[in-house]
Amino acid sequence: MFSKILVFLIFSIISKLRSEDNLISYNVYYIPGIAEKEENTTISVFKEAQSVTLDKNCNIKKLSKEMFNITHTVFNFYVAGCDLIEIESNFLHDQNVSTKIMIRDTKITKLKTHTFVDSEVEIIFLDHNSIEIIEEKAFVNMTNLAQIFLNMNCITRLNRESFHNLPRLAAFRMQYNQLKTLEKSCLSFIKVDNAKVMLDHNEIVELHDGILDDLQVEKLFLYLAYNFIETLPTNIFDNRSLDTVDLSNNKITVIADICKRCIISHLLVYDNPLNVTHYDKILEFGKLNDIDITGLDFGKNNSHGFYTRKFVIVLILCLLLAPQTL
Image (cartoon, rainbow, N blue to C red; front, side):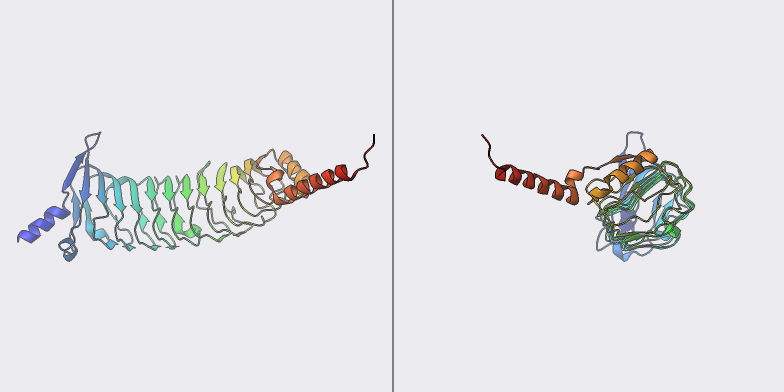
């Protein structure tokens, strides 16, 4: 009897911390040797709360809908540093989490279909996990969702079908993963003008020539720096509206054929081995489309640097070997 009461107290909201706006924060601790033996324990919140946190002391392997009974609004839901390996589909079904979900530093490898569905949250942090696969419709019908953080995982594919009906998504981060290619229409789930898509620091080698197909937004910010891109498909940005395209630190030699007519305000090409013989063509391309191209420092590119050094050496030799006249 005593042990059951103790378990109830542990799994109920045992730590109450007043926040600045006089709301409550609940830290739920799972005690090894007691909590893990209870399979049907429910975490209940019966008062408006700032946050519910499952921290590194929790001994949980799976998040399931049976775990929670949140009848009043909780602004933030945190899971950090647990031995979590699985998230059940729709695990927060009918739970009143309104603003932020953060699941970080866990061992989850997959986001299942309908992991996040019909939720009112605005931000989801899933960075610093071990996610490899995001199934189709993992994120569905989230009308307030503005930001998704998926950086620092092991994701190998960006599948547009994983993200469905996210009308306010304005920031999508998938840096520091293992993407190798970008497929046709892979960004069509973005529906907001001026949205930021951050895919830098991956292993991208290939871009499909239709990656922006079915994308109906203006002034997109597209970050593809620190990848292994060697060539850009001809007219890949044709008739598109982008504010910024960052292609820095790739292996690109030619950029003048990426579009005939396009709207790109800023094109960043720092630290690419751009072919110096295309210099005039690049400038003409930028002028024709009114693009601010930055990073055209050919002194730092292999070809131009090589020829510059060679010219200087030849000039010095000519001066040294030239006949001396009095």
